[in-house]
Image 1 (cartoon, helix red, strand yellow):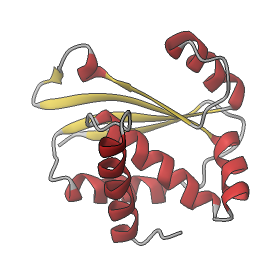
Image 2 (image 1 turned 90 degrees about the horizontal axis):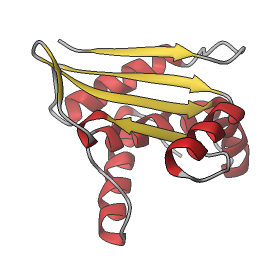
Image 3 (image 1 turned 60 degrees about the vertical axis):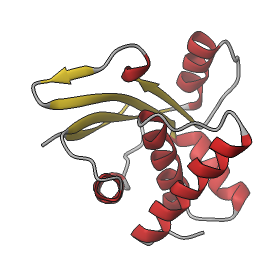
Image 4 (image 1 turned 180 degrees about the horizontal axis):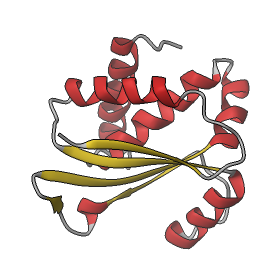
Length: 148
């Protein structure tokens, strides 16, 4: 069995962590996956902007950045497939929840599933891939019970 690890590099507590872990377990079942491991790291806008600039050459704040290990090599730890890391800006998630008019939990859940799907190799670089990925995101969130 794999693991989902959460790390908080901000000064604020992440009270939504338990709910996000349940959501990710649902997503793993939905995607028919087991024996995978990955991390969710909560950061502030300054840190995510640094990551965005360093690794994507984009000098601005973003909401989520995913580092997929399979982009470089498949990493196995015994029988566990190590997928990578998802960085989420708590500040940006809060800003977007207010902008989009839904709960902070809904925004964190969306960003978490978005990052999770990137770890699995989904992307939105063209219209067709975007439609597939965004439909899957909504199917997982709706199936779990987190609706807009």
